[in-house]
Image 1 (cartoon, rainbow, N blue to C red):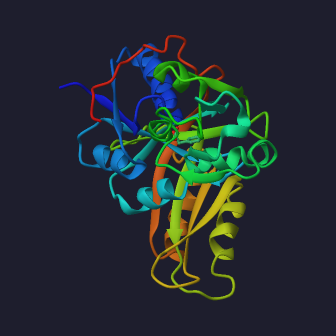
Image 2: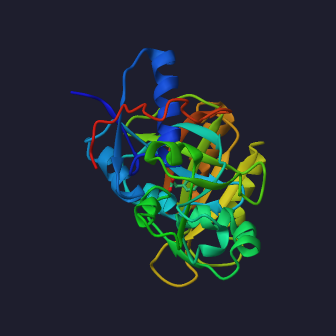
Length: 296
Ligand SMILES: O=C(O)C(=O)Cc1ccccc1
């Protein structure tokens, strides 16, 4: 059976760019040949790996401007089987695509909410009166362009090449070093790497309840690189805490800290230890490159 990598589609998304970078890395590292498989949502892409339909899923988890991708954290908490095998960091450079001749013709802009947020300042100055419509991905937005010159979309230049759409403006993200971290999630742990991610709920909502787990990490000389809260969805004000630490879970001090954390948390989930791979040049040079197994 073909082993495939699930990602948010359709073709040409930033998630596919990250999935392609992972496939290239896996080929060099282990010689493994993996295929792409596009899904209509991040949730469906993650389900595909949880149920064994695909080998791994590549999903966005955090952007330098917009912060966390909530659905990724929520699904990771919900799906019991997924472990983080690798993190990839990609520079994200957005383009404005439209069949309009002039910017003034554009009345509506479609894109993924992350992309709309990352280009908010540019939209305010260039298209102050435009209606902004969120889509499930940057390339789903492109289906709205058709022949309508009043419509624009934010996606990558690579997507513009794939769908042969005109680029009216390039590098429109508000921050030059806009980048997104993607996780590669699978049913097996990688068991190595200097990053470890975990999440927990607290047994009581009382003063000091969060302090205890944080004190345990500090006492074991463990540096946190991120802490993020998400609602438990049980009641208002009840939270889950997602934490990234800069250490491998197999180190004795980390093992001891994780053991102690069990005593001051309600549910503790360890998502594994993994390494971080910076991808400096993520854009596949050939827009016709298609290693898709064709799910969409
Ligand atoms: O919609 C996409 O292309 C995605 O992969 C989600 C996304 C959107 C913007 C930045 C990073 C990821």
